[in-house]
Length: 137
Image 1: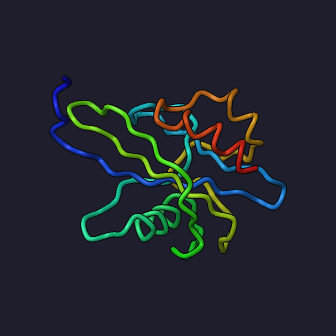
Image 2: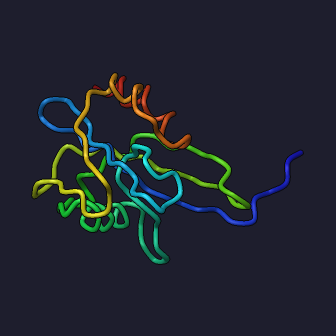
């Protein structure tokens, strides 16, 4: 039996899908863990926040877009070891937002087909999302 993690890290992410059936990913900046990898935008759930409220806040902070919590559709999740703790990553699909995404907290943004996600270097927790996104498209 494996040792229980000392801390659970709940994190939210969005698969933003545009009218051309492409999904948005962002590249992690230098100096951060997993720098240079492509990921779905999102971040940590703060105390007192619902996952949807946290993701709406993170999308404003990272991309400068406004997403209403009711426009986030729960899609799937990933579970992975994270240092001494454990990461629980909740993925939501989103097809409706206000504003044009801008890389406010990333090196670059890229709109890509679901199949092309397989060619990008991604964090281990994000990679399991690819088949789910392919099925959704």
